[in-house]
Length: 498
Image (cartoon, one colour):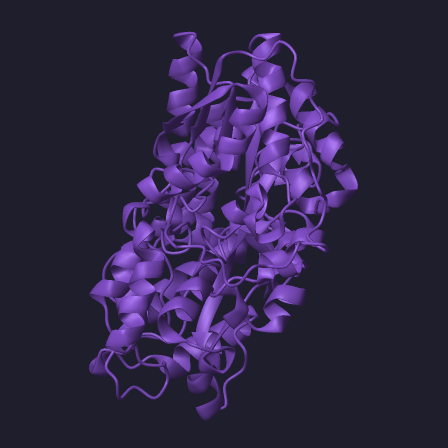
C-alpha cells in the first residue's frame, strides 16, 4: 500500500471498524513515512515491493532510533569484514533500487566507515526496481557493470550469467549458512548448490482485514478459501458503496503477485518438477476460477491496482484485501500510538488453502558481478560490512532494516529476535506474536512461481515479463472459462520458452 494512497484516502473519525487518523497522528506518520512517496511502482515478476504496489513495496520511513538499542548483544551474527584489504580498487559502484534521496543518504552513511577502512570510494547507481534487469543487461553490454548490487529476486536471476557465484557463496559462508532462514537461502540458490546472492531482507504477501468487523459479525478468520469467501459475502453491500474484498485485477504485476498467494495454497504452479509447463493443471484451473469469482462478485467496480488499496481501505469501502506485509507498517505508523491501538486490525500471513498453508514472498539480495579480482574483493568486503550487526541499533545492517519496518524483514532469525532490531519506534508497536511467530513463519513458508523447492526455473522471468499470468487472471475475472484460459495460456508459455 502506497503512502500516497493513504494520504489521499483519509477516513472519517466516526468509523467503528478502523482507528481514526487524527491530524496529530497524520503529521507524525507523514514525517516517518515521507520517503514512501517516491517509491510506489510495480515490478515485473518479483514485485518486491516493486516497491509499493499495494503490498509490494512501498517505501518510506524514518527508522527512528527508538532508543539506544543497547549494545546489540543478542543482535545476531557480528559480521565483520573478512576480506583482506590488499589490492582493493580506488572506487566501486553499488547498483540498487533505493531511489528515494533519504535512502541513498542512509546508504552513504552506512558505507562511510567501510570507505574509511578500505580506502575505496563507493559510488551509488539507483534505478527503479522494474528497470533492474534492463540496467544489468545494458551495463554488461557496455562493460559498465557495477562491482556489487542490491537486487530483487527477478533481477538477480536475470543476471545469473554474469554473477560471480563463488564470491557470493563465500560471503554467505563467511556470515554462516546456518545464520539465515532456510527459505531465504533457497530463494537465492542457483539449483547447483551455489548462491547467486546474499539475502538482505524478505517480505511476504498478506490478507489484512478488520478484526472489529469480523468479531461484530461473527465471521471466520479469512485464512482459508471458504473463510475468505464467507467474509467477503457478509461484507458486500454495493448499494451502500461497500464491497466484500479488494483483490488486484489491473494490468500489472501486482495482480500476478496477489493471485500467487491463492494459487500456491492450492499447490498450483507454472512449472512441474521436471521443468514442463503445468499451468493447465486442475490445481491452477481451480485457483483461477476461485480468484476470478471473488473479483467478479465482491471487488469494487473497475480494475483494481496498487494505488486503489489505500483510499478504498481508509474510506471504509472494504474490510478485507490483499497486500504486501508493509500494510502493518502503515497501520502502526498512521493509526496507532501503542500496540493496543491496533486491536481493530489483523492480517492473514499464511493462506491455508485446499492443499497447503503458504504465501507469496520475495527475498532482496546483494551480489557480486564477475569483474576484476580487486572489484570482487571489494564487493565481498562491502557486503559483509553491510550485514554487520556490531554496534546494535547503529550497526550497518540494523540501520538499513530500520529504513522500512515491516518491509525490510531480516533474513537471519537472530537479528529478527534481537533487542537492537526491535528497539525502533514503529516496530515496538507490533504485536509480540507478529515478531515472534507470524513474520518468521511466513518467511519460512513463502513460495513463488518459478521455484519448486531447490529447483529454479529462470524462464519465469519471460513469462511474467510478458504478463501471461496477469492476462490469464484478468481473462477469468472478465468471465471467460478458467479451463479454457489455463489451456490457452499454458500453450502460450510453452511457445514463449521453447
